[in-house]
Image (cartoon, rainbow, N blue to C red):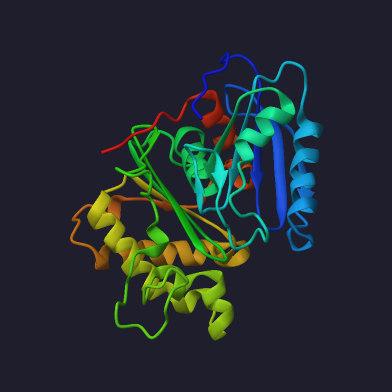
Length: 288
């Protein structure tokens, strides 16, 4: 699904979430004009939520738009443009969304994982700008992530890299992740985990620090960008500050204290901007 439209033309970026859909025309400077926000209405089923996606695109569409970039929660196949079966989009099973949108609107369409899109946007135009290696994670209902190296998404040998939410921090844990593995960080420290055991985000800091320490040991990133609802609002600043103290104690990397741990800069538009960037051809594939 790779396309390289005119770099001067606006591209529509669409971010499909479980609760809302964001869309906007994005120029080559990663500026989103008059973004549109609609409720996903996911609980009402596939037909209703798909109609919301079409409505968001139609509201953003102008004659000079040359391509559409869509990002959505996984699992999905970015090569074929098919959404497989995301848990927070009921009824979205094996949906060839890129092909459907291309046929409906008559222009090229790309599909990308939402955290990959946000990671690329933050790396190129947001908090990670100027860093060669950026690790991005959204700690929300689950924990999604993306890795950007030299301005490009790192996808792995089989287009399956970047699933840091499924890194195990306690393989003996009685808590089994939805993926089937005990002790994934998503199972222990995501929003769903906080809700299930009644804890507060601050009580999950040890797990998050151990996890990020392992990420630092593996990747040696120039910066870590952490977003998502669990780290939102008034708790974000003290939690990030505490993580900056704890993470260097959980890694062999002697430079860990020099690695910034920061919040995203593009906010709720990171997915829209990243999806549009991918449609424009900025995020070339990097494979091992």
